[in-house]
Length: 193
Length: 410
Image 1 (tube, rainbow over the protein chains, first blue to last red):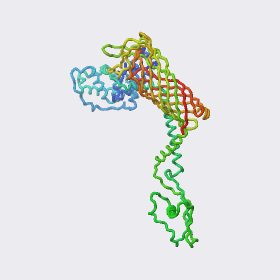
Image 2 (image 1 turned 180 degrees about the horizontal axis):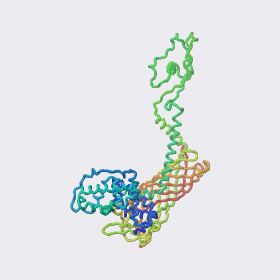
Image 3 (image 1 turned 135 degrees about the horizontal axis):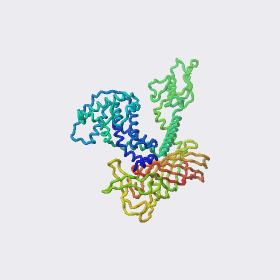
Image 4 (image 1 turned 30 degrees about the vertical axis):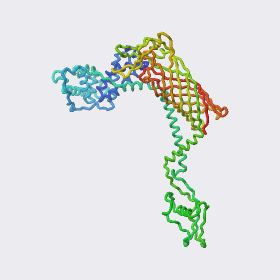
């Protein structure tokens, strides 16, 4: 089914089209929710809330970008709203608990490595990981993040710096990241602070 | 690289998430909620009414819910201090099962033991002494505590009430010749299922909506049953009973060569397995035309309210609504495949328990010693005839004329 047909079906509140759209995008969106949440259950709750918004607001999609990008934005905003209820974005936490190391395997399959990285991100305190997710993965600017999380822009920057350091440490301890050279490379995908 | 690695990681949500989304976006048929609300209302009215009646009967005065008042005969005692002819027996000899509440009553009781209990208020006068008299007692009600609890009293009251209702309850037997039909909803599935060694796509090349794809006609059915009417007030009656229904409709189809037809999928996601059946009937393009009969036999327990709109006891017009928990004990149905091409029986997808609702309007009149009731009735099945995994939804409906014979129970 093409994206146009899918969209039209969803606009008509057609259950089959909605299911198709959900099946197409839910795995990726759940992994996004998972990065922001503290548990799988929380992630599924976020996903559910997000997709209900997607289906009820699909008439507002204006074809300016990709459908996936539009859904992703709704899901991310849903996650942020979910987290805002706890209001922990201003916390500064020391990395004292990231000591549990997994046994390193040679030639770790890429997908397993991806899982490990996501799990490492989830080990960060909620404020750190939210800023890291938004800045380094979703690509929001610190100004946008500050607006979304209702914090100071400088707080967003400092949270990100600390989050980055903490993540590097966790990745290194878990032998996913080499201590010296790769350290810079891991985060190089993100914009400079 | 962090983004790249994060994007590689996919998670598959549990079925619960989609079910919740689906429930939110497509709430169940409003009829179900309305019916349950009506049922709840009926239950509430009945409960309040029974409770009120029980309360009225168990509380004769503002106090002493578990006491019975007994009026003892008045006794006037005229006695003198000097006289020893009248001696009250010691208190310990008294019957301990009855607990008098005052010394006056104790004396009254002891006197009653010595004297004849059927005598009217009695004056006991010692011979020769008349001046110094003591009027000890006058008709004092004595409270005697009963061993029954409040709940026993309430139960007794309810039983009494039931007996009272029984005197005014009416009993009806009825038969309803009807035309059976169905409401269909669903679309051709576009999923690709795997069975045997072949990949099989269920893309329907023709009509996508089942309503457009199917040709079906109403069939004769009937309903027979009995209900009791319990009057709640002059106009409103609670009705409940037992009934059996037979519903059928016909489908235009074609006979064809045996084909594999898909009806549903067990589970979703990567481990899904299709539910297939061998079909010898096609929805179109077959060798010869055939008529398929879908038949349903069911028992129901109608519970509802009957409201007399106008008229008197011998001639009136009433409307009634019932909700009917239903057990379908036989379902001989041909199901259309999810690609809307074939018909076959797939009993594993039939739903056994269902809920129906009925609306009726009746003219009730007395003819000789019997009271008759006649009027149109619409019956609608609230849940699909098939389990949720079958994507096509079918709601049965019957429209008929209800003919009832009513007797008052005495």
